[in-house]
Length: 220
Image (cartoon, rainbow, N blue to C red; front, top):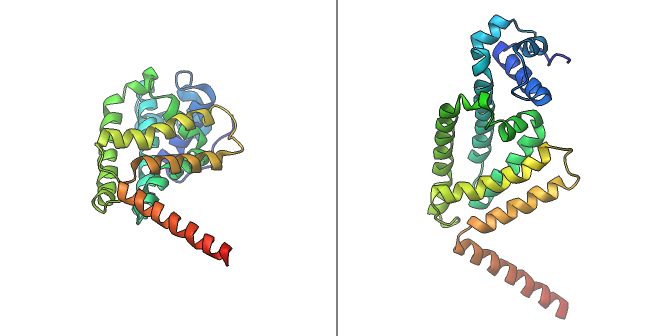
């Protein structure tokens, strides 16, 4: 297996190599020797950064999860409306999956593996912190009456579960030709599910005005 591109950050280089190996061989079948060969790092360096063989998969999983969390929160911070925030939640997820196929496969398929399960407590804690940050950012759009007031559990299910279900099919095979259409359709569906009635009314009113204007132009 060829080495990954050299990284000045040794830890990041080992992480990238582990992701490649896990994708090729599976978490349970990957050896430290394979990660060493791909990364170019010494066994001692791997153990220094990620611990022993039994713990490396969980620690790699946690770091990949943090990479996704950081990228999404950065994208969410740029949103100025509830609609943008919700659609960005969906679209950024699929953009990240497309750009980091092996890492996305690890997150979607390796959570229940015994090796990753060793870090389940830390993974749950990281996820709780992440969701608290997400809900805090989205709360402003509930306050502005753009989004419905939903419990954190329901909002998380609506935003995350459909994305994970669709992406799981993508990572098992080639990216579908209509991937953009699928992700855009899902983004629109999720927005319709969480938008407030006032936002719905506003959209309906604007659409009605457009139809009326078009009708008048036709009669002329």
